[in-house]
Image (cartoon, one colour):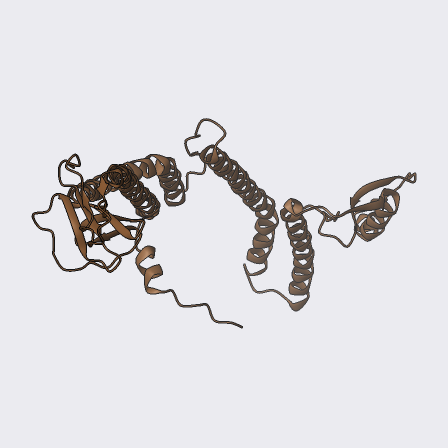
Length: 365
């Protein structure tokens, strides 16, 4: 036989909580996970959208800057080295945009726009979009040179931080409101269950099985529960009433034989008697005891009438003849004679060896 598993610490803690708190806790956990996942999705979508907008701005600026590159080629043809490439004077980026023209080694050849904090040392060249030193950078290859366009991510980072704080505060507020609403809903949903429990406890305490639990309207689970409990109470009340009727019947049926037996005992013990008189008195009491035994068997058979019937084909004429044969001696002693006029008759009933009622005869005083 396997031993039952011991409860875990979590199960012990949950076992001390009411059903309302368990439902509220489960609802709060599910709602919190849903809200946090939704907040994370909003934050991720906002970050992607803002980054995509910034990248689109950098692409447009890079297109304009690429058209403004002045290569400074050797137009005289005198063999002198050309001047380094530069931007034309028409290129005037606005705001905090920074445009740089780099050599293949990463050396900065020209700058435009926000160049106040620009570093003069060579930069590693990586084509495409990257984020470094708090700036969003786009690097494009233009012939043998590289065009780098960048913009600070301070505004983007600040907006995302504000959005994250708002999402956290809003999520905490919604979870708190959801917990309160969940507890209120659980209380409303379990209120009929409390009524059923209180009524059942009252019935068990006072023994008033005529009382019924309030019937919930509709066809939901609570309506089925209250209807089932009331049906169970109906059956229980019927069983109790049958037991009371059986007790009253048994007391009524046993009163007369016991009174007669007690009277004969008192009469036999009223004064000293001869052995033959005692023998006669005891012989008469044996008949009363047999009557009580038969009555007890009948009451037991009556008590078993609530058991499920096991029906079979029974021939009534044979049973009547058997009963008459058992009562023949008692009838002869009383100067009576039993006459039968039987015809074959088959019925569906409990067999002779079943728990069904049996016929017994005795002589009444």
